[in-house]
Length: 319
Image 1: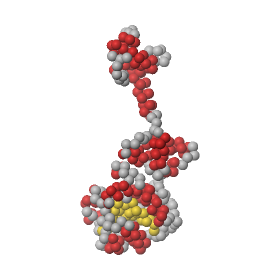
Image 2: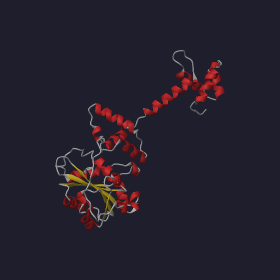
Image 3: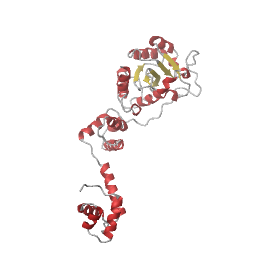
Image 4: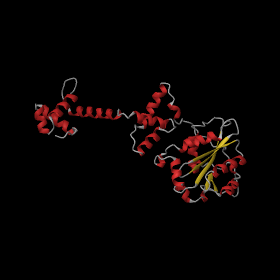
């Protein structure tokens, strides 16, 4: 006789036959179940205070046991070590789970990973330091009235090819600068819209000369892979035409105070703040450190990329 799990209806039938005074063998014959199945069901789910078998309570207890069994499912030590390996690469628990599911690897829920990390912290561990911290969104660098970058010849974002909005065509980038505390030092970020691939450049100051020099250097590493660049209205971009001439790229400018028009860059700057928190001085920041941060970001899986990494997609689309 093939074993099948008892249903809620089966339990009401068993309870009814038992109330009629039938023995285990008779109940088994009438329900088409093995006698041991009926015996085990009644023994496991009878009420503790009077020994009676009640179908509703029996079904409720069974569901509770199954739920606990699923929650307590274990993964192997090797799989656990892989999860922790990704956490130590600064991946979020959701990114770890998404990536492992993409490649059909057994894993645990991201909630379970968070719980382990917080237990580790309570015991003096440092896994929590690999999680993104809740930081305030950076404020725009201009006041209520923004008179920066009012250049007669600059192209408004509305003139940019409509295909750029779809993120399905390559070669379209966003640019921005992120300031440190207490010095002129800062960084310039370039993010490719389709893949999220990121370049970060160290700047000694936010002058147009410094920005142009570093930006052109970064772009020359990927010659021919830049079609458009979208910027905000910062004065550091006032000599954008020099970048255009040196790299054969067209600049477009977002509407003042409309940060959502450069959402890719704004989001990436938030990710960078995990490594360069707001209020951190960038006076000692090196280009090597910038490259290391970019490498980490480019090798984190992203949900919008199907849990591929920006670097995997960048290589795939540009090879």
